[in-house]
Image 1 (cartoon, rainbow, N blue to C red):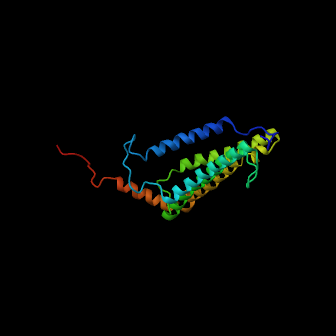
Image 2 (cartoon, helix red, strand yellow; image 1 turned 90 degrees about the horizontal axis):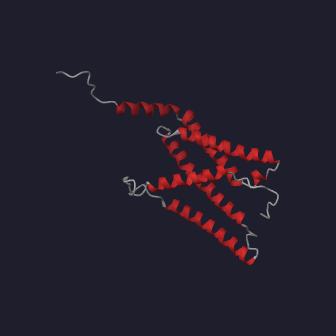
Image 3 (tube, rainbow, N blue to C red; image 1 turned 60 degrees about the vertical axis):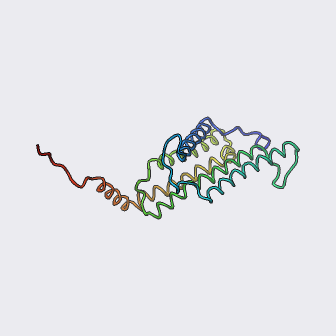
Length: 208
């Protein structure tokens, strides 16, 4: 790239595998909102809201617009109102979409926990794993920059750096909610759920 001629790419195999792994799992989850092939019953409220559909449309439009602008620049070798964009900017555009989607992914759960004043039934183990991944992702960027004595590994990959920090930020909120703010409510709901599962009548023995 002419913008960073002296820098080596900071993308590693684990970055590609992470993206591929996330894509496959998201497709599996999306497929569960269709009657086939899982056979699950889909409720009427289990459909995307107009706001979410508009956000998804805007993200796709933003990415496609960036690709069209870069293609126009490449074919005609000209500058546009937004400057001379390169294919690297397409990568940045997809990164921005990822950051937006990740932020949208966390906010509803934070709000639901706040409204319920509890996190019972919420998988804190997944959050701990997500926190570990965010910390290690940032550490990888920092270690790459330190090993090469070239900090463009960090500045040249802003999406990964910001994504790791977003994950850590929201994971810290979830951990605070689960272990401190709503701990007593979680214990109460857990006892109530345990009592509801117990049978009303206990058979101590059968008469022959």
